Image 1 (cartoon, rainbow, N blue to C red):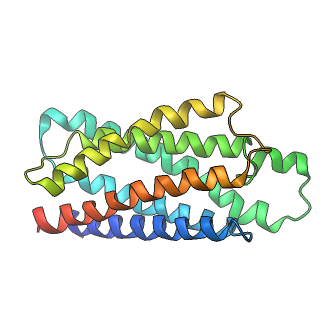
Image 2 (cartoon, rainbow, N blue to C red; image 1 turned 90 degrees about the vertical axis):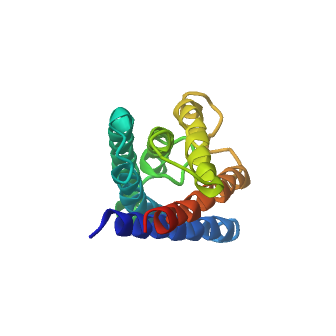
Image 3 (cartoon, rainbow, N blue to C red; image 1 turned 90 degrees about the horizontal axis):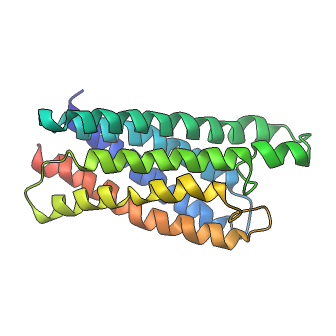
Length: 207
């Protein structure tokens, strides 16, 4: 399968999963949709890896290879962390109704401030670092692609936010779900155009 095709497929999967995640979070204000949210997030990671590797593959500037390889490495770390968190939520936690509240407060993503919640934020910190590094490698020559590159790099700001938030008592079990939902919806609104512009980048510039 060609690099461009992989990039298109990756951007479509990622964008679709981000949209599904955004919808599930909104519905989650009124009912329990954590399974759908976690499953959607698994597919964000499944799409993100080929999306990023394809970006690296179509930019052949040897002077930027180190940034590209580092970006792929951080993308892999992101995927591993979120796979562990979300797969545990979709399987062990969801199917074992006998888990104590003390156990859930450690391993459940649904508990703000839990260990797995913090692992999840750490994963997204590495995702942001990945987009920043790979964004620096892009060769662009039109406004749409320049916007795509800028959005990838600006997304890198989330590295600092996601890395340090768990170190301070900002999100705890007492924090309103509405706050978390608003933040996540804002991220979805930002990241979905990245997926659309990414598809355009492969489809228009490298077809």
